[in-house]
Amino acid sequence: MLLEADQCHLVLVDYQMRLMPAIFDNAHVLANAVRLGKLAQLMNVPVWGTEQNPSKLGENVPEVRALCAKTLSKMQFSGVEEGLGEWLRPPAKPVGGNARSLPKHLQKPAQTDERSTIVIAGCEAHICLMQTALHLLEDEFDVWVVTDACSSRTERNRDAAFDRLAGAGAELVTTEMVAFEWLRSAEHPAFHEVQALIK
Image (cartoon, rainbow, N blue to C red; front, top):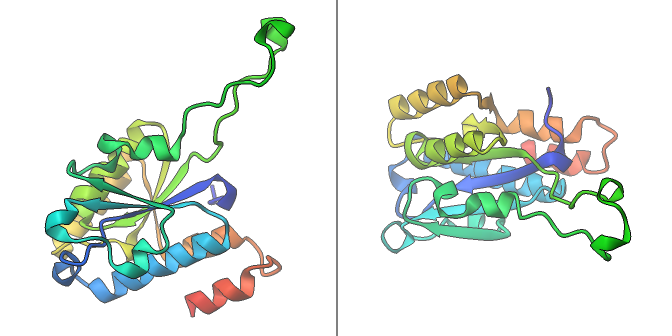
């Protein structure tokens, strides 16, 4: 199974100004988060952000925040606990027209957003990223964790999060895997722009 850009949302979790200096391999992780956001914009994939207790940890770094359509301020470690799921799967739109105009079996079902795949990355991998991803899995989203754009204060905590997420059914991928699965072909109109971002 490969990622389909038109089925995806990208969620960037807690790349916050006061947290990032303590994160293991922070420059590499942050560069990949920004790369993911730019890739998503090129491929028309909606980008969402979260910030844990921003009054204490600060907002997301400006280059991440600028890529997000909306950023959820939260106190719960899981963004889903504070409404992220409603952003990713909005309520069904009512069917237009008079409901009495057709018998029920001929009426079209209500329209919903068809995107059910969440590409997610963030910090700390073993806390906010993991809890958000596990809740998304419980809510029947397909969850793909971008490992080279995730970290924690220690390697051990980061790796433990990846082990647990894989065991729960999340797919573990890298930034380049996401980029080239979204593209599918060197003939894609965005190929050269994506290639430039990856290089």
